[in-house]
Amino acid sequence: MPVEPYEAATAPGPVPTPGHPMSYSTKLSLTINGQVRDIDVDNRTTLLDALREHLHLTGTKKGCDHGQCGACTVLVDGRRVNACLTLAVMHEGDDVTTIEGLGEPGNLHPMQSAFVKHDGFQCGYCTPGQICSSIAVLDEIRANIPSHVTSDLTADAAVTVEEIRERMSGNICRCGAYSNIIDAITEVAGTQA
Image (cartoon, rainbow, N blue to C red):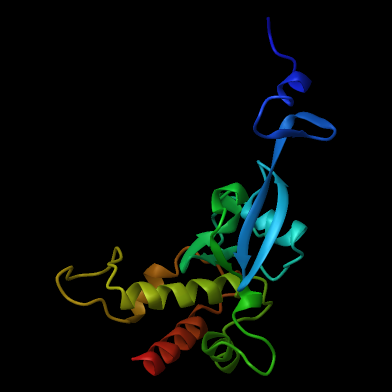
């Protein structure tokens, strides 16, 4: 005898979301920008939508919603992630940093300051994702993680224009501020050496 969707709700596990008997929700606990946040989301909710719609952190932008533009890039446990391509339920207990968690007016993150100094943005829509990716790029290079343009896998990774371009290739700027973004990343890399 087939189980009706409403009967399944009496079994242990997820419960149907009101109004959507075949949809389930999950309670999550994530650390967002240093603060533990508990949310209840539909299991199909992306991390991007959880941040924007449930937590009202709208600095992370929805661009293509297909992982092709990088506007939604955030840092999850220190690694960059396209928030539109991952489900919120996959990040129970993770440490998520959005653009709001990097700095604030009067106390900007060095990468944010460098983007301002070098005009690393025009319309600014892609900038939050660009900055989060830029921070991760420098961490990847410091960790000696090779990219597709790394010529010598036995040598330490280096901050070069080619490396930055390759590693930032998943972040699209429709305004074309790429050379200024490279200048900003290069400056921050020089101060961290």
